[in-house]
Structure formats: C-alpha cells, structure tokens
Image 1: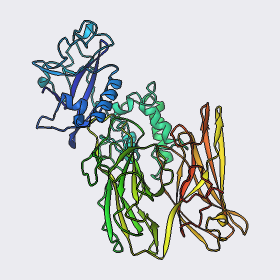
Image 2 (image 1 turned 30 degrees about the vertical axis):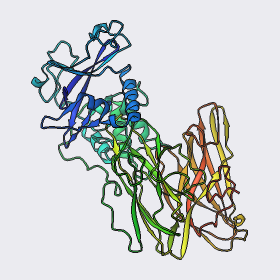
Image 3 (image 1 turned 90 degrees about the vertical axis):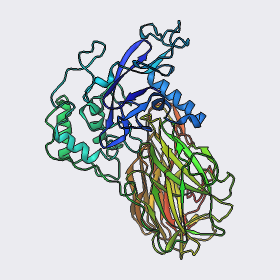
Image 4 (image 1 turned 120 degrees about the vertical axis):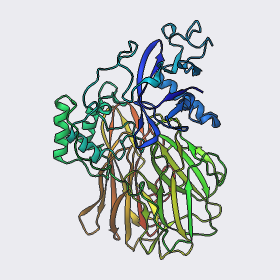
Length: 565
C-alpha cells in the first residue's frame, strides 16, 4: 500500500474540485504520533522513515469493528466535506481510484472535473522524498507555500511561558483528555477555532482565561495570575504577532498526579483488589481495548459482576488512564440486581435511574480514598453489578483511538465501623421558556429520612460533586443550622465539560437542613428536567455517613439515596 511521509508532508485534498493543503508533522518526542491541524493519529506502522499507510490514516484498524468503521468513515467524510473515494498506489504517490464512477458525474479522478460527489484523500505531491524537513519546495507552482521566515512559528517568550504553565498539560503537542487542539506553536494559535471557525484560537484562549463560569485552565487547577493575563492581553491586542522565542527552557507541563503517576500500593485493609476497565468485546474478562470513534460527548457503559458473595466496603478507587487523548472522565455506579449481563457494553445517556454513584474522576481530580473508620457502601454479591460509565470526547478526530482506562477498586468484606454512600441533593422541578437566566432550588430535611426515625445523630459530609447539563452555570448548597445562621457547603461555577469532585467536609447536626440552588443560562426555547444532555438537571452528589441518614426520597427517577424533601 502506498504511504504518506509524516515528517513535514503536504498532502492535497480534493474537496469538490478545490485543492487544499495540509501540513503533517511527526511529534519530535513521540515518533509514534502524527499531528495535523485536523485529524490526529498515532503511527501504527512507523518504520525508520515514519510513514503511515494511507488507509490507516482513514480507518486506523477499525475494520474489525464494522460499526466503529462506519462511524469513522462518516466523521472523515464530514471533515473532508464529501464522500471518501480512497487511495491506491501509483508511481506518483497516492492517487484516486481510476474511473469508478465516484469522482464526479463522469467518473473521472481529475481534480478539475470533480464535482461535489467526490473527494480524493491523500494524493501526495510528486517527488516527496526530495523535500526538506522544513516543507516542500516553495518554487512548486501548484502549492500555496508562504515565503520562509526567520524563527518560523515562534511565539513570544512571555506567551510561551503562560501557555506552558497553564495549558500544556492538556493542550500539548499531542492534546490530552479530549482537548481538540494543541497550544504550542504560533501556527496553533493562529488556526481557526473549532467551536467558532470565524475567530482565531488565540482570541478564544484569552476569552477562556478570564471566563469566570468556564475558566481555563479548569478547576481545580490554579488560574493564571494578573501578570500572566496581562501578558496575554497585550499580545492579543497588539495583533498576536510572532516574537522572540525563549532562550531558556519553558516550564514543564502541569503534572496530573493521578493520570501521570503509578498506582500506589493497595490499602492493607483490602482483601479484594481488582480493575474495571473499558474493553472492546462484550464478553466477561475481555482485555481488548475499546475503539473510540471520532465523536464528541460519547457515553459508553461497561458492566461487571461483583466479585464477592455477601456485602463489602469500598476503601479506595484509583483512576487508570490509558488513551488520554480521548478520555474525558468516568463515573462508577452500582446496580443492586444484575439486569445487564456481565461484560456488556451499552450506549449511555449520562444518567442511571435506580443505580447508586460510588466514585468518579476527571482530569485534575484525585483518587477516592475513604477515612480509616469509614467504608463506602458497595452492593451485595454475586447478583449485583458495577457499571463503569466512560465519557469520551474525540473532537480531534483520532481514528486510532483505543482505550483501556478505568478504575482500580480496593474493597474489603471485613466491614469498617461506619458506612458511607453518595446521596443526592437538588431538585427535579425544572422548567425554562425563552432566553434568560433561571434558578431552581431544592431542599433536604434529614429528619424526614425513610428510616421512620427522627434523625438524632450527626451526618458527616466528605465530598460534593455538582451535576447539571449544558445550560448550567452555577451550583450552591448551603447548610441552615437549627441553632441559627448558615454555612456554605459548596458555592462553585459549573462547567459541563469539567465536572469535578470537591472536598467539602462538614457536619450536619439534628435539626439542620440543606438548600441547593442551580443557575442556568437558557439561550432560548423550552427546557425542563430530563436525562438527555439537551434536558437539564440540578444535582449535587454528596458522599456522607452514616448511610441513609439523608434518604428522604423525592426523586422522580427513583435515584438512590435522594434527599429532595
């Protein structure tokens, strides 16, 4: 099969008769990766010359999963603006298949005769081997190559330092955690933004750095300080020009202690240590990676049988990060009855009626570790199930994404003195009509718990995890003391693309109650409560003990451990 060179190659893409050029660069410190301004993928057959088979770039071994292959072809066609013809070998590099009736009305593969019905993917410019590492010969009349510049793609040093300090953890040469683009070179920042193609990336970078509701870098990472924001503003307002690059080394990328470090040894209390991971085949014990299609906001549920008989406590839940280019976050639920087969892979919608949330992780988050005298409620085996919900965000269009991310569970059947669970605060009474800001409030009165007894013991809250949908902008939960006054449990902006767990240690005493308020910005139309992303929710998941102390019910979808009365 013909190949494309990945080191500074320009390929022609015929899109409805018009020529377009793209530049592809091998990442210097990761020769297995190829990056271009749109589709990005890893080399699956990278020899000494770093070459990628043409159809590997298109389908990247997805042939074994027909559904995934079909989705990938659709996505690639959407990126290219028309159907995909394919490639075949020729003396000149990669050429269109000859006269198969798909390259325009007459079946010709000539670019000038092609209409909207055809696209040639990956026709290499002749004599590619003679190109320099810096790109093709500018004298080639067929190519629109900008004149060479000294210090090409150089960002001013102060800009590079800000980006390296606050952005490179996700937006490095190979973006991570669903980030759609790199923020490393001057070209990266001059490119059209994916979310707003009419604006360059550098404008949106500055917008997000000063955005209170959806800041970049996202919480819990520290924000840029005033001097750093001022440096970015000065650069943007002066035209975002190239400048003198840094002579000294840039700050290293921010390290995600969980994603970038090894798993710690299990707690000595654990007598069950096991991993729940994404997998490619819907059979128990499968260890093949899951092929992630080039889609955004993809939810996939993986079901596992509980590996014990009787009851147990969860001691810790440590994230396992595999293909960090496309992993956005994961949530772990428990289902009391095994309605879904062990090993099953099912599409998700982001909600789990009747199931209980146990743990979760997003980039920048930490592992869940219970206090020494407290264990997390886990389901009784062997009929119960774990459900691992993976959220993938493959906006960059990687066609070779394969993932085995998940969680290591450390549990014990020698239960600890206290049992905790994740309880649900908020409201499901939500209705919006027309544009504007909306607020909805839910109450939790612990003395109405379903045990039928007046709550006479303190309730210990450990963590809070807000969950709203796309319109959600803010969540506040306050504690109203029986003795008078209020305390804030959580008061935080909300970003659907960055849902994290907050450490919120508080104690509720008999007679105290909680109030949760969610704020939304509705662009227009009608919206109400629902499980779909286009619907809305107002939820604060709090980990608290003793288990059941906040169970009042009130959930319209019968969510476990709800306190909505």
